[in-house]
Every structure is written in C-alpha cells, then in structure tokens.
Image (cartoon, rainbow, N blue to C red; front, side):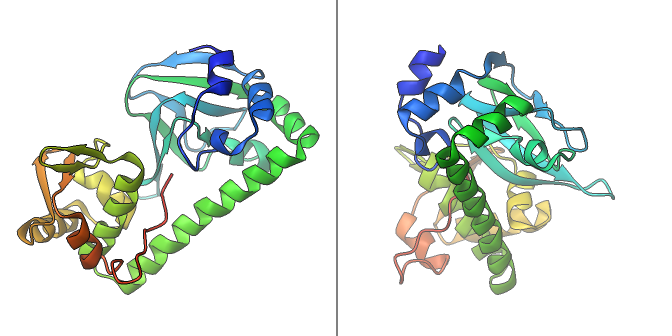
Length: 243
C-alpha cells in the first residue's frame, strides 16, 4: 500500500490517523518511510533511546513492559492507524515499553526531529495527539478502578468486552475476540497471574458466557450475559477501548 492510498483510506475509529484531516494525514504520511515487518519483530524496545515514531499502516502490535524482577505484562494493543513511540521522542527519554508485531505488518517510520517539527507547524494535530494521550490515560485509570472494585473474573469480562468492541469477529459459534492472546497476556491486561486468569475463564465458561476452543482464542457466546456479569448491562455501558 502506497502513501497516497493510505492517506485516503478509512482507518479504524479512535485511532490517531482516523482523527486527522485528510490533508494533515497525507502530510504526516509523506514524512515517513514505509517498511514491511515480519511477525514477532520488535519495533521498539524498552530501555532504548527513542529516535523515531511509527505509524501503523497495516498492523496489530502488542505493547508490553518488563519490571525489575523479570515479570513481563501486556499493557495494550495497537492497530492500523495508531501511533507508537511518541512518548520517548517528545519526552527525550528512553522507551518505556516494547512493541512487538503480532503478524506481518506494514509501518511508516518517521524520524523524531521531523515529527516534532511537524507538530510545531500543525497545532491541530498536536491537539489530537494530546487527546489520544488522554484517552489512553483514561483506559489505564479505568483498569485501576476495575482492579480495586471487582474480582478477576469481572475485570477479565470487562477487558474482553473492550477488546471485542473493536476487534470482534462474528461467527457461527459466537463472537471471536479477534486477537490471538495467550492467557498470560490476558493476565497482563487485568493484572493477574496466568493461573488466576485460567480460573476466571473457567468461571465464565461454566456460566455459558464464553468458550476457549484454542490456546489463543476466546469466543463470546452470550454477549448480553457477559455485559450483565461485568456489571455493565444496567447502565448500557461499554468499557473504555484499550486501543
């Protein structure tokens, strides 16, 4: 996919590129170099200096971080249209997380200096970036509230609903989560150990809400029931999206 086609295509709702005007999007895409990237490749690595930002043109990536004792947690998922790596560039600091491609991807690499200069000359884009940062902070805050107010099974149900809202794939057996995540990675999103997530998934399955036909698959078989279990049905709420 070329830069001209990318500037005019439809991007997933809520992503950085979807929020820009077509003119601003075309100019931003024109700053970078498009690269094909194989699966399981680290685009950025925690602790390294930040020299570039990356626009995800056709990609699904995982954002993870490792603490001092070696434990690694999945922090977020990013999809086509999202921007990654901007915090280290704007803050002139090292990378706070590692970003890894989940499958074959196409990305646009923009040098940090060029990106900062672009923001200085396009205040509307800088404001959009600020709003995106606020949205991501809201996601993190909501997860902290969930951790404090609900047991793991309900935290997990809320995260599954947030993921399926964006990525879900309807099928004959229900709504597939749409993202291949291990139980350990789901644990990273809800702040729980893998064994605890396994127990929570068994609870959801025993109530006829989800099924797990494979190691990296979760299928929702009763969406209204899962919303009710997650304590979201009464208010008609949908949990904040993690992307």
